[in-house]
Image 1: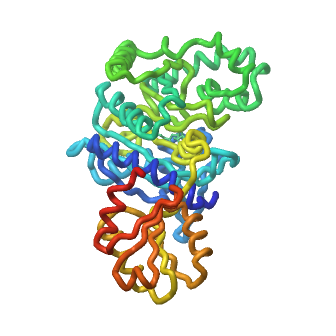
Image 2: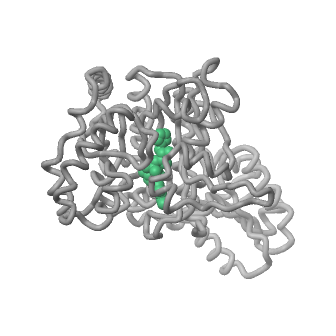
Image 3: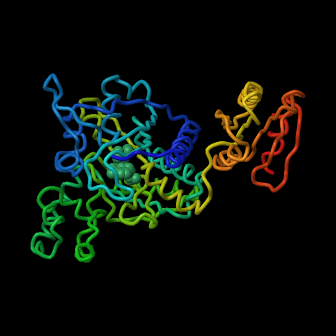
Length: 414
Ligand code: HAM
């Protein structure tokens, strides 16, 4: 678990704000869910054999002897809330959430034990248009963030739980005689969770999988037809994707459509956003049968990707840095700061300490501000301010108090 320092935090906020804006434009509503849940929710919802539950969950007994867990993801909590509040049928809710998730994984760049997700989940919709809609939301967000060229949308149809059980049998039958050729992780998975072997990053295992029976052959015609309809909708919206027959997901709740945006810029932690359908989850948690579909984006990873795309652009803390020549003008510059904050969205930082003018200007420069607003005795006496463009050489002007906001607003591009 790490500290997120201001520069990284600003990037996370930008990404979360973009998700919020786009999700609201699709009329998704925000839901806030607890960070702690009954451990049993994840045992049942995600599956006890999954890595997230069997190896990575932060779980403990609380003072009442209840088994609790820090949530490793948000879908199970969201589904639990739908059941608890009987929301599915009246509302067919389309929800989004943001917050920290916890997994005891081996930390490395892009993989943390506490990480931030924004998720979206739609309940009560079984048609292909909602699958498409969620991928359209993601595409809009990544477009606004300017990273569409860096990522690829992978898509697969993994069928129903019953179909997957048949497929699991066929996969085990194919792999068992050549078990010794698999990597050790995959050998272990052969017993616990064989379908996850498809996810193996081991090249020899991947070679072996080339000849494995394809999941598509085990999926019903109805499901394949719906999947074709999802693809037609994506084609119609010019959303590019790659059908990836070996794309499987890490939790047991998935059914039919699954998808993942990946990038080749982040090494092994290549997935930045992932999701799919989970038509049996609500029923599994005690609700009436209700289809569900959603995704969750890994904000920390998207931030690393954004940082790489930005190159060396400079981080700034403020737009306007306000300086009193000496302590006598401090009240006057506080009034100027109030005026700018009240009438603009600019980030205004006041120099609040006594000191020499040179040092104050260095602080103004360090803040990354576009403008320094300076008041000395003469300016304060005439209720004027000197506006200095910090990034344009020798550019400055002295204006009256009432003109400051106008001059800043009109010269944003300069
Ligand atoms: P997930 O694939 O486990 O799916 O996680 C979604 C995203 O969270 C990943 O693609 C990745 O970007 C990010 N992520 C996961 N683990 C870490 C980590 N240790 N450090 C940093 N980022 C991480 C889910 O969580 C499902 N609930 C998604 C979903 C929603 N499916 C349907 N609805």
